Image (cartoon, rainbow, N blue to C red):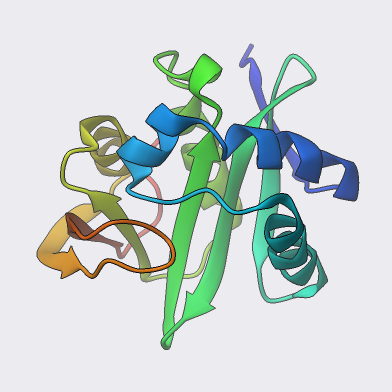
Length: 159
C-alpha cells in the first residue's frame, strides 16, 4: 500500500507550507526566493479562494510532505509542486504527481524546472512530461536568473 495520500488543502496546512518554503536548499533547487510570512499567507489565501486552481496537500502517514497544484497562467495550464526537503529522495514527489495527474485530466499541462534541479526533472519525466525547450528565467521577485527546462504533458499519465 502506498504511503502517499493527497487531500484538499486546508487553511491549517499553510503554516507547514510556509515553513517548508523557508528552506535554503529547497529554494536553491527551485531557483526561488522565500516569501515573508504575510506575503506567503496572502498568496495562498488567494489560491484557496480560486476555484480554477486544483490544489492538493501531499501526506505521508498523516504528515504534510508538501503540495501539488495546477493553475492557469498566460493561457496555459501549469502544474507545480513543493516537497519539504526532509521528504526528498523517497519517491514521494513522483508518486504524488502521478496520483495528481490521474485526477487533473486537463491536457496539455506545462511545467518548468531549473536546469540544475535534476531531481525535479526526473520526477516530471517519470510522469510523462517531455522537454519542449529551454529558457532563461529572468531574475526577479521569485528568484535569481536561471536556465530552466520547459516541459509538456499531452496525454494521460502512464501507470
